[in-house]
Amino acid sequence: MVVQLRKILLPLKERVDAGEIVAALSQLEGGNEVTLFHVVKVPITTPLGVEVGTPEWLKSLAEELRKSGMNVRVVVAEARDVASAIVEEAEEGKYDLIIMFKKKKKGLERVVGRSISEKVAEETRRPVMTILRE
Image (tube, rainbow, N blue to C red; front, top):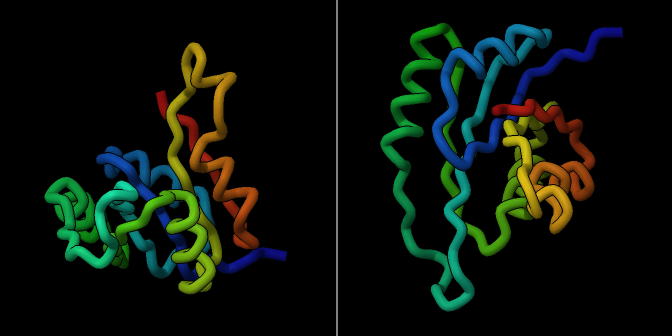
């Protein structure tokens, strides 16, 4: 049985090469809509509800992906906890798949704390695919 992927959530902390995204999505069946999701982490001392703009790097990445033929949406949210914001978006948007790029941990990072992708995978009911980047 082939699962048709109509909606894909792609949380991004920073710019990723458009070619990496195209390569990852080319391995999947479907993918009618890709949502680039960026979370602006708001400190506890700052009130929520402040208007957040879309970073230029995210706008240009979306444009590059559209030029390659993808149907791309961009969503920017503010939150105190990035993983919780990703899970909330995934559940509310009823995404078929969450794709997360993660960097290889170094030194103490490997021992201390869980990564955002690990937290998301534990908290969501949606499938999560992680892609390790150098």
